[in-house]
Amino acid sequence: THENRDTAIKDVNTKVAAITQAVKGFGIDPADIVTQSVSVNQNQESFYDSEKQKQSFRPGQWSVGNTIEVTLHDVNRASSLADILSKSGATNVWGPNFQLDNTKKATDKLTEDAVADAKSKAEMIAKASGATLGRVISVTEGGEPAGIYYPMLSGRGGGGGGTPIESGTSTVSKTVTVVWGLE
View 1 (cartoon, rainbow, N blue to C red):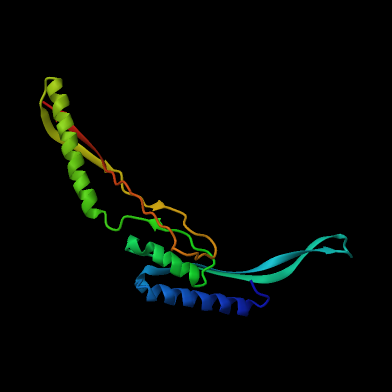
View 2 (cartoon, rainbow, N blue to C red; view 1 turned 60 degrees about the vertical axis):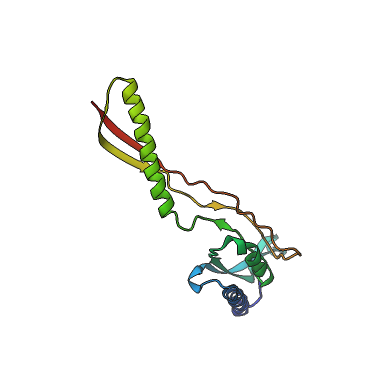
């Protein structure tokens, strides 16, 4: 916040430029740095108006914000990036938001496995009912992977030892419904 709008904007722009430069210096591709939001607001100050004998408001200081999103592809460097962000003038750091980078091959294989599993179960059911499995009538798939969000750090940080980052594990699942005819 600042009394003067232009000074507040300049101050935030200078800080964001420094943060962006630090992130690029860390090795983040500029394509992985995205501005999420920019805000410029004048706060309202409350005061007691003795003439009107009531609480009143007047324009106050200017609040300026600029939010950037940084994508890091190497989870092993997340702790170092969090430390750089917290030491570079960022006033709020949220994340990391862990997401699977490329799930195409994994979900393709899961789909194949799910269809094979469905066929195995359908053959067992057909046999148990005295029939044989006929042709496939329909296939419906679902179960796309989703990212997992972990809050990490808020405010200015940077105590010794680095920011602890635990990526944990993620589960990717695929649901396939296959309908066969029985003969």
